[in-house]
Length: 329
Image (cartoon, rainbow, N blue to C red; front, side, top):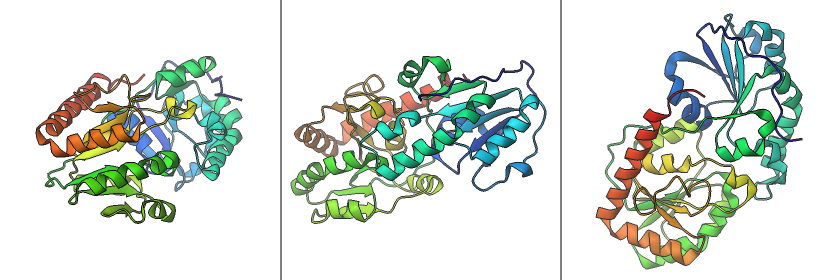
């Protein structure tokens, strides 16, 4: 049925408190909200906290991140008159998850089903919608959404560089992971002292079996991933992306992960990276041709000066955007 149209009215008076309802410790909450609100907001894990235990001041503003359990939505309905604003933050095309054939079936089904169950309640309690990209705003004009782009979340990293290139995608990127197998195979054959790192399960281990010096790490929760990034310094990060409707609505957050690890990035020359990456300056853009990716990674891994310059310019861009766009929508 598409994205809902918020029906609740916003109150002009605001008691000054922001309440962020998040389904666990997830990157969405940090890169969209903590980068702007810092510790001025209260962050509540809706999976671990009962709604009835939450103290709600008059005039508070609530932000729902991606999903909220129905018990929390019922609680918001009960107290809606006391709230100044209720915002829904959408950072993927969740209403169309079941049409995204590239997503694992169970992941797509669970995402779509949770949204379908909550849609009517979200419509009643929300006064506005924030989305992560212009593409999402264009897709759902009826929601009158405002764009809230992700911002760079830095971490202190003083680790010595390792001869590692990497792809840190989740199970939602299974097609990109499979596409990288011949790229990595050729790169590992070309250089005997390079290592490749990827996250994945037994399926991913089977895909890369037989390719030397491939490290398949088990998936990490977001706090663990930030801790990992604080102690790792890699050379090149990969961000392949296929041209699908679901992917065209994604944000450029992979740029942050690559930059945070001290690396230069190679990206698909498609949305969401085309238009955000300055080719040859803040990253390398490639067509989705394996040979072109092999050449790009080889060049970066072997050229420390260029690699360092790209990382430094990407870092400067990320930090500038974080300063320039810190205001809430």
